[in-house]
Image 1 (cartoon, helix red, strand yellow):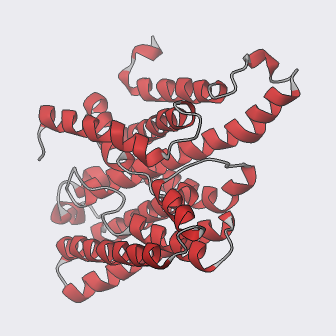
Image 2 (cartoon, one colour; image 1 turned 120 degrees about the horizontal axis):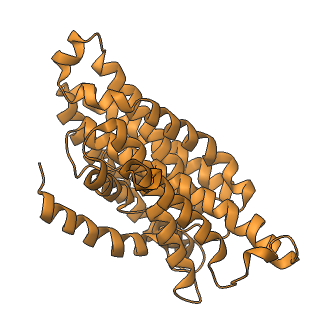
Length: 319
């Protein structure tokens, strides 16, 4: 049976969790009421469906960014923030909240732009160091530290009664109040990143053989690495701009996928996308149902993601 094939486990699991998330929440209703009850109809189509789609895209984006960076930098602990994407996006959002009246579209746009800027600066800085991938990683760490310090400064000078709570809540991550119109800014770069990285899944297997072997096969490894980093940055910065800083999903998801499909990136890359989407959907469902007031999603992802990573690494080891 097709459902027993391990390659189909993650898509089926994702579909089940996606449907489950649509009917679970503070207001529980029978699926049959969607077209007969106006309240159920509004909750399903105007609140839960756009939110579930956004969560799925964000989870897949973070997971694909994670598996891409892990492959390129040959480090299984690499995540979406390795080049300062998350910190840059968080700084952009904080700036928008601090200096303007809160506007979710402005916050999204500013977060996305600064996420891309952070990686661009890291690239320029690494070119000065002239030390290849190592220089890029060090540049990313420096840029991430810089933007983290700037975020601390913004929190220090922000109005503690009006601006600071908004900044802190955004930094903790949340999909609360998300509607169809909120997807307008982020959904396109997320889809471009997701589709592009899945289409380039064969690249990682070639790059794993080394630059010389890749060159002998007629592959421009430097160009493909740059394209991959661009797509991963696009996806990660867009997801961060939509929901704030979401921890662990980008690091943990590829490890979970490897347990079932192995290290062949032709299977691992799409599997990681499904795992990321499924994991974030589960965390988001818990965030909005465990307590009367919604829990910031990074708290849930950290509680779940950190132990999962420790268990996986204790069994597999880190190479």
